[in-house]
Image (cartoon, rainbow, N blue to C red; front, side):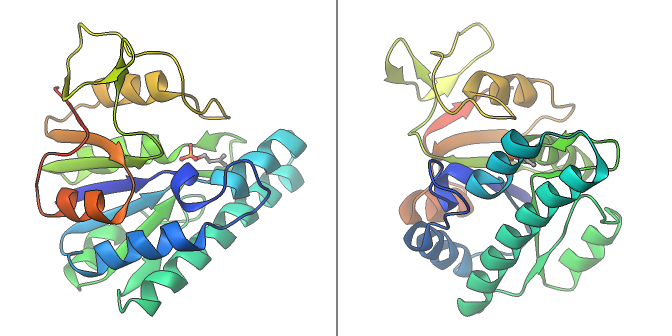
Length: 221
Ligand code: IP8
């Protein structure tokens, strides 16, 4: 099993508002189309979910529903693009989904595509948290984060391997769900051991990741 998260900063223009990055998505979809067996795909909320969180907050059902709607719309566009590449993508919305369905969806040859979302407790569900949960539930062998950076930076350089004793440089997106450091904390908090890679989300890297090759930074658990 592989779990791949494609960051919102890869598939959308993060500075825009609901701005879909058509070219980047096409690259990712074309790499996935070559090899999507035993894969669970997750994507971030990018310039769809995050601006709505900033604008409306999570104060009442209407604001939460608006955030969810934006995340779902991004998911629909991503899944549509995957279908254009002949990938049998099935969008799964964490707010409403039955997680127990995912294994059946996988077994029947579909590609489940989940996304960062909100829940009925007025909380954000980060795509990174979903990666950890699904990697644990499905005992994934391989976990990947396709991001807008080449890997984890330590003292200004991308490291090939990142171990618990290192400290990542503090930069990267700081939105409702946090920075690279927060991502690393979540990865180290995972109750399952597997290979984890953080890399730049482009066609070549996604292809390499899906064929089991080392890419970007490997987080050593
Ligand atoms: O972009 C965040 O998911 P992420 C979800 O994976 C919302 O961190 C609603 C902002």
